Structures are given as C-alpha cells and as structure tokens.
Amino acid sequence: MIAEETPQIFISYASPDRGRVLPFYDALEKDGLNVWMDCRKLMAGQNWDFELKRSLDKSSLVLVFLSNNSVNRRGYLQREIKIALDKMSEKLFDDIYIVPVVLDDDIELPEQLKPLHAVFARDGDCLLQVRNSLAFQLERLGVEIQQAQSREEIYWTLNTRKESWDGLPGYEVEFQVIELSSDRYLGMADVSGLISGWLLGELLSSREVKFEQAQDYYNYGQERFLRTNSFDAHTAGPSIKGKMMSIVYAIHTYGAGAAHPNTHFRTYSFVLDPLVQVESLEHIFSNKESALQTLKEYVRTELKSLKYDEAGDGELLLDAAWVDRGTESWLDFSSFSFREEGIDILFAPYHVGAYACGSQFVTVPYVSIENALKPHYRSALQLVEGISG
Image (tube, one colour):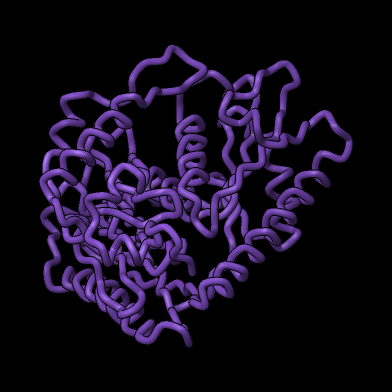
C-alpha cells in the first residue's frame, strides 16, 4: 500500500500531564490534523520504544508541553526535545519546528527553548494560539519546500509504502519512496530508481521469514512486537548545495526477540551535472590522509564537548575513548550529507557512544576542509570565489 505524505505533528509531554494534554490532542485531531500522541496511537502489542522514536523522527512539527513534571528532569521528554532541537539545527527543508506550551506558570523554560515563542495554558485563548502557531508553521513548511524546488529546479514527492505479515516471526515494513524529476538536470529518475531498488530489496528480504518460521522460539501468546521483524525508513527529501545533492534516510529496525530497537542511517550524495554518485566521503578529497586527520580532530572535539543538558550539571554525554574508537577510519564517516554550511557526519547509536546516548551528528564546516577537496568537488559545492548558481 502506498499513501501520500501529510505532515505529522508529534506531541511530547510528561506522563503525569496526560490528562491536561489530551484535550489538545482531541481538538487538533478534530481539526483534521495528523497528530501523534503515544497514548492514542500506540496499540496493544506494539513496541513502545520503537514506535515513539520513529514517530518523533519522521514528524514535521513537535508540540512540547512543559510543566513541573517535566522541566529539569531527565527522562524521555528531555530526549525528545534534544532530538527535535538536533533536527532544527540540521536545516532540512522540512525542519522540525518546536511549539512550546507552558502548563505551569512557575517553571523556567529550558535554555534551548527560550528563543522560541511559547504559548501559556493560563491564557484563555491558549488552544487558539496553538492552532494558529501550527497553521503558520505548516504553511511555512509547504512554502519553503515549494520555494526550494523552484529555486533548485528539482522536484520531488514522498510516498509511503507499508506491508506486514503476522508470523513466527512476522515482519512489518514501512518506507518512503522518493520520486525526483528535473528539466535542468537529466537523470533524476535514475536517482529515484537507485533508492527504490534498495528499499524494495529490504522488503523482499523481509519476506524471507515466511520460509524460516521458528516455533521453538516464538509463539502467538507473545506480544506481537516481540515476534516481529520491523524495518522503517524515511527521509526529509533532498538537500542541495551548489551542484551537489544529498538524501538522508533514517532507518529504524527491530529484530524479533531483541532487547531493544536500533537506528542507523543510509545516505546518498550526487554531483548533479554530470549526474554522478559520490560513493564515499574519502573520494572527494585529493589529500586523503590530511583530510581524514582534519575530520577526526574536528568531529572528536565536537562530540567530546556534548553535555547532557546545558542548564543541568554539565555532565559530558559521550565517553572520550568510545568517541575515538568510532572515528578512526574513513569507514566511520560513511554516513554523510552535503549541507549549506558544511558536511554533516551522522553516527548511529553505539557508534560513538552508548545506546542510551542516541544518534549523533556533527557539521564539519567547509572552510576547514575545502583546501583538501578535489577541484571539481570544490567547484560543484560553489566554494570557489566568484562561482554562483
């Protein structure tokens, strides 16, 4: 089954505030918005951790409810806010916009959220303000995507395909198919075909469990998610820098019987004219040894400076030795994306830190590595003075 995408709004809240938050969910759903809230969307037998993470990751907006039950306490809400803030800084075409709703007047907004316009529950028109904020952001999102497509002369649509089968084990697969077209750059259909081929391969591989049923390990008395292999892949669409294009897929997986789900990334990058795939980050540098050393030093410094929360005790998030092990070779930099300000390097959980630390990314500014780039890549990224689109 393939369905067109509609922007999803994720509701983030602390469990004790559920009763105060549900009326907002009900009102927004009645308005016809695509709203996701765990207590209303999760069904019996679903993997709570897996579903929550992938729903947050694919949402276009996040509505964060703040109270004495959530502020200055570590927990899932803090992690949700961090993920949303990270996505804002990625500068994707469909950036996650955070709309804070303050439930208790006596709290102090987290430092990261202070620059954002907050709505206060004490206001008589609070719900109206929330509706207006969401409508504004949704309209802005649509306009920005249209402007980006028109400006770059590359057009795309995202459609979702789903398939599942209940077995021992079973499987469920969900992924976004990206369809690209352009009158300016020939071959966009080839990019779509390349990515679709990978996604279809994952679907076909998932069906193999029909031949490998294991009734000694699984039974229908178990929760369904415990006996289901899950694969979810979605993208925000392309990012374009000069004559370079990148597409990032976030992939959430769960293997039947595993202790927890996991996340990783698959990235595609291309020179647009002529259309050529950039198969590795190493390939774009003329002085590979020097470039790798520069990348290692910059990325390690950034990762080792991460804190749990800036307003808290300032405890470092990642273990330094773990960071060093996860940034040693070119293979460690295999997930990358060309952005406006620099090259994003993405790291899955376990790569540079413990699973609980989640995914990490670092943007390496072009100014720090442009001298090591091969000339045609420097030109394609429009890093040569005087070159413009």
